[in-house]
Length: 285
View (cartoon, rainbow, N blue to C red):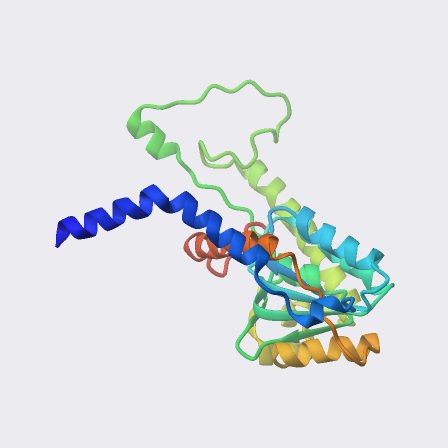
């Protein structure tokens, strides 16, 4: 029995590339739906996983903006946040896109930290009843490996100019001055975050403890504090995109099948890693 199992595993290993090639051919050449024969007038853009780079999403936003056939966009968000610059890049790209065509941001799972920041300038923000929204805050962290390095006999040699050049180092405990410098940086970034949220959502900066302060909200509570406009399902969000875009017969843009297949593999892997390493915590936002 074990030999049969071993032989089967070996056969899969020997023929894996061929099977993968056939699967890709099947995906590429499988029959397309009749809707693809009609020009798409609505587009869904996904923001999934930790935000470490904005290039892919920015490219889709730019293409949607330039495509005159596309009348409205759904930004489908399921992300715990990420790095500051790419989150802000997406935020302002959505703000610009909104000037040309309506955008609805939909929280399909997690819309927290940087991914919430990315969504704030949509015409409307709608959240799935079971989604998590908020975490408007900033975090900067680093391990202190000094004791471990001492134990295994590893030391560092540093040549530097500038009092704060080693601020954030993991090789030793931060000095009070270094901590103060990093706290100033996170405070500045937090204030920028809150300021943009307040402007986009019509909230008062002085009331930030109610809707920001890194609170993690259920979709119901997120609506109560003004972070979202409605609690509803994706089908409702898509319907509202069509209504705002004044599209009577919605045709959603479909991605190339091969591209969608490869993307789904990548997204699934990222989300699994996210579950191990991120949880509800964001990298910096």
